[in-house]
Length: 182
Image 1: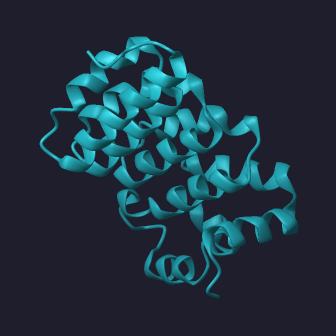
Image 2 (image 1 turned 135 degrees about the vertical axis):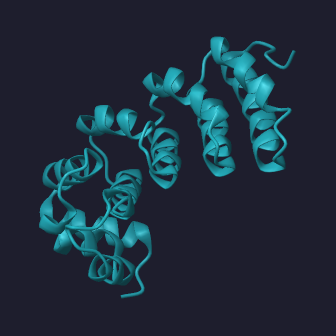
């Protein structure tokens, strides 16, 4: 298929309309049955989704079925309705790290300020990519009370995390018009 994620999301939006597309993404994020939504999932993610879904069966360990949630969250970056907010906030606590990371990207794309308190624990996530995404998201939506956690994250052993945390603090300082760096 070769389409980019944004092209796939927009094409799905044209097929279904915003309301139905967002509702189906939300259902997947809430651990809905991906096998009931294979065609929809392929619309969202293209050939890679078709291959992944062919590898899986309903009898598989549920922990292997995280990709449909990742693709649903990714589609919400490009096609949005506020009805998705609760599911995105819950996805920040998903068992699968890729879902947590993508949910943080949705927070950034739609500036979901209500995610701030849920992002702070992700600064201690075992996966560096999740920690980095959480720091970046806090730079966009965080408030002054989130600055201490970001300052602590500037000492993270992973440079991608410490760099993102420092940039987030600078961004928050500018956005909130106060020095949060110390």
